[in-house]
Image 1 (cartoon, rainbow, N blue to C red):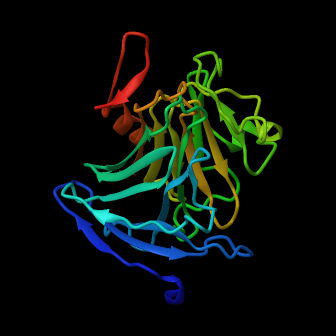
Image 2: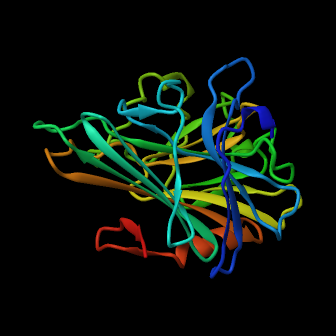
Length: 285
């Protein structure tokens, strides 16, 4: 970490959980060639020495707030009684944004609430978080071989799917028939892959196969990986809900799992953590 770029530093050890997390919040330039410092949460686990994870919470909230906009990129997080972090943004006249990181037994729950403060419905809202791995040497994957998604009921590495881009996007089977959309679909149409997914979890397994990190979103619509060397990030995205009525709030929930074990250990941890409704949609317990 370049100390000259640190505008704010917070150290917090979350206890009361099976997994112990340490968080540092700081501002820094992430991608070389860009001059926009952004606020991010650095995550370390004492049982995984040498691996440091970085989180943008969030990376973007539709057109309401985006971390790549220098005028709003700095975030002031506060600690919570749950041992996590909270960011509240009220400077956009269209919406209030409330993002919280909540440590749990073997995961981090990321919950963002968007409240419409206008007199009209608010359309095109989505929330994108980003966990990236440039300083997690055990997890950096340059050839897609340790990143897994499920298609047609079978877990497969991205490498086995022969991605046509270093930024492959895989959409839920039948997208967008459920009514949720991806407002960036047209922008990224050239990197949409032909394979569809049938599970919300994307899993990155360590090089030695002994550890895994999974990301899953409620109401997921697509998964992607960005192989950019400054990111190596994995995403599970929920798309956008129907327009938010005036005065109402939409909630976006995502979890990041930190699991001792490989692919199926991560899948098992996720499956134990959710419940399904009668039509097969899931929510975190």
